[in-house]
Length: 201
Ligand SMILES: C[S@@+](CC[C@H](N)C(=O)[O-])C[C@H]1O[C@@H](n2cnc3c(N)ncnc32)[C@H](O)[C@@H]1O
Image 1 (cartoon, rainbow, N blue to C red):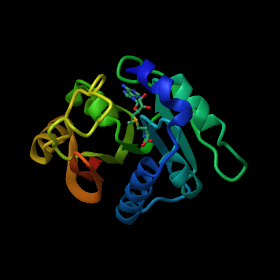
Image 2 (cartoon, rainbow, N blue to C red):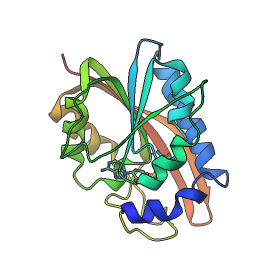
Image 3 (cartoon, helix red, strand yellow):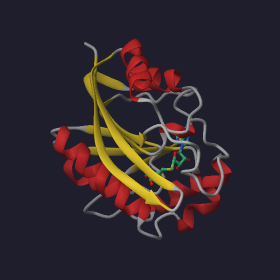
């Protein structure tokens, strides 16, 4: 899976689709969460930073976590005095970070992680008291979204109620789903949600 993203890292930002998804996801997150300059935020599966760099200027610090070092190299090349994102190339599910965050955001990375319950348990452990998650991914699809093949794809999107049950089980409250965008391809239409929730006190 990591090799797959490393191989496409230099091309990742080309074309409109991923830019538009990041733009819509950012719009949905920023309309639901009052981001402010005291917050430390993690972008899980940050990739080249398409979402991270939209949020970074609005918060105190942004940390992009990813397993694909070449994706993070592309991200690091975008750092500037105006917007800067720290990078961590580490599996935080097996090697947690020492710091905790006011919020965790993510775009299109959840479906690449096999054990969703373990992932949300990891998110919970990396949040400060009453920290938030705001996470974008595909609604349940038929496996045709990834037209290049489904290597490294563990979930064909998510059923909202199944995801809500996992989130509530591991300790999140106020779980809410918001429509962010619909990707239209020849193969079909693929709605994307942002799910927001708060770490239970
Ligand atoms: C579809 S890309 C999305 C990248 C970026 N968020 C965007 O919207 O352009 C998924 C990213 O998740 C990363 N990823 C997958 N599993 C991961 C894991 N367990 N920990 C951290 N990153 C992971 C991949 O390396 C890849 O960069």
